[in-house]
Image 1 (cartoon, rainbow, N blue to C red):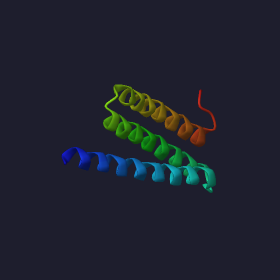
Image 2 (image 1 turned 180 degrees about the horizontal axis):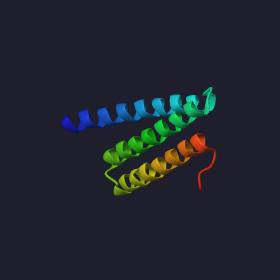
Image 3 (image 1 turned 120 degrees about the vertical axis):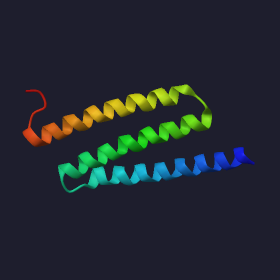
Amino acid sequence: MSATILQFALTYAQIAMIIALGLSCWRMLRGPRAQDRVLAMDTMYIQCMLLFLLIGMGSGNVFFFESALVIGVLGFVTTVCAAKFLMRGEVIE
């Protein structure tokens, strides 16, 4: 019974993450300002990372955990570069 509850909870969490990812994508495409778009992109990579972790927990595959780590690092660098570009107008000085 515990395994079925865990599987139900993982499935529910995956569906919730997919819905949240879709709403963040809508905000990124429709955002009125560039700051809203950067914030939506930051939220999207976090949600994508969490979705990979949920899939990895459900399947037991280590590949998804490593992919989530790579997504987290690349998302952080992307957010820093986008914020620096919005502040100064250039990324590399």
